Amino acid sequence: MSTTTDEKTYHGLTHDQIESFGAELDAIRQRVIADLGQADRDYLLNILKWQRGLEITGRALFYLPPAWPIAVGALSVSKILDNMEIGHNVMHGQYDWMGDPDLNSRMFDWDTVCPGEQWKYSHNYIHHTYTNILGKDRDIGYGILRMDPDQKWNPYYLGNPVYAFLLMVFFEWGVALHDLEVEEIVAGRRTWKDTKHLHRGLIRKIRGQVLKDYLLFPALTGPLFPLTFLGNATANLVRNIWAFNIIFCGHFPAGVASFSEEETGINEGTETQGMWYLRQLLGSANIAGGKLFHVMSGNLSHQIEHHLFPDIPARRYPEIAEEVREICERYGLPYNTGPLHKQLFSVAKKICRLALPGGQPKEADVTGVAPAHPLAA
Image 1 (cartoon, helix red, strand yellow):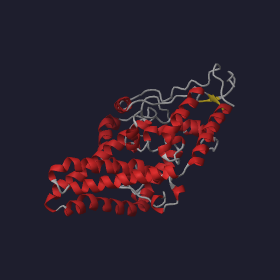
Image 2 (cartoon, helix red, strand yellow):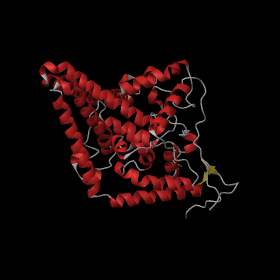
Image 3 (tube, rainbow, N blue to C red):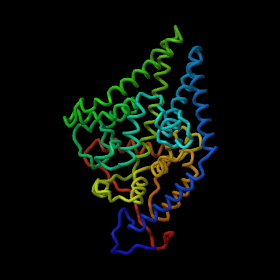
Image 4 (spheres, rainbow, N blue to C red):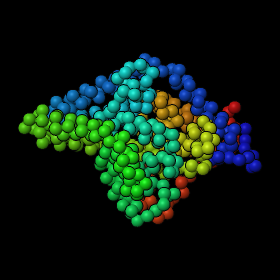
């Protein structure tokens, strides 16, 4: 199959090529789903065991002041595992098939100030449905930053690097307040009354987390209260910095595409499954690394595979990544990946560049299908 000059294309591919591309990805999805079983269950339960063991170890070591750095380290890793490999993935419904109510997406809640129910709406629904569509996906800049050159510049964005730094430090709070759309309230397009349905759940979750980390557990260590308080705050800070950087490297390095509502046809319902797959691919980026790095990132280092298959257990992403990459190469599509330092530098550069008017082109480097590399049927 090859393209002709008079065929209408979408991001370098004809309609038939996009549907063929989508069918190949559908086949991967069906094969993995059919293979889910005990190994996936054992993996999650093992991660849970490590996470709980590290949390108990960390909190116990706060009773031994010389072991404070180790306590903070253990608690930090525990919180990262809870947030990334357990919370994010379980609340995506990746393990609903297990039939375990404690690990069901409708029941699970994580160890952050953001209520799980609100996150599932803003992330699972809004972000994963409208990925990188400007004006629809609120993860583009989180209502605070200018992360796309098509976002109209104004002097407020001169503070882009400062806002990004503050969002990184207080990331769990930024995620918690995401649904409130505070920027819309400030602009007068939304009122606090419009967000009333969110307040009770938000207050309940924040109250519980603050009491646990900054009052109850410090109080249990008696005279070591200040050290334990500081240790819990440090662990939350470490988790915030790690999560922010992994997530920003998943969508904002150079070469990641954004889209307009008109070009996707999402409002008219004309976006096909193949077009949806293509948008997820072009709007995401991976981070190269070893097995432990992938676990600590919740396998969001495979952001491309996650966006293609958000409800498949994340532990499966590494095993299908090479296959996805090979398909992309055959279709002349980019597969955006690189080591953490390269992706971080690219993101930082974009944050600073977009603080100023203008910006780089948003398109990914799509070459389309070359006639010398015919597509699979």
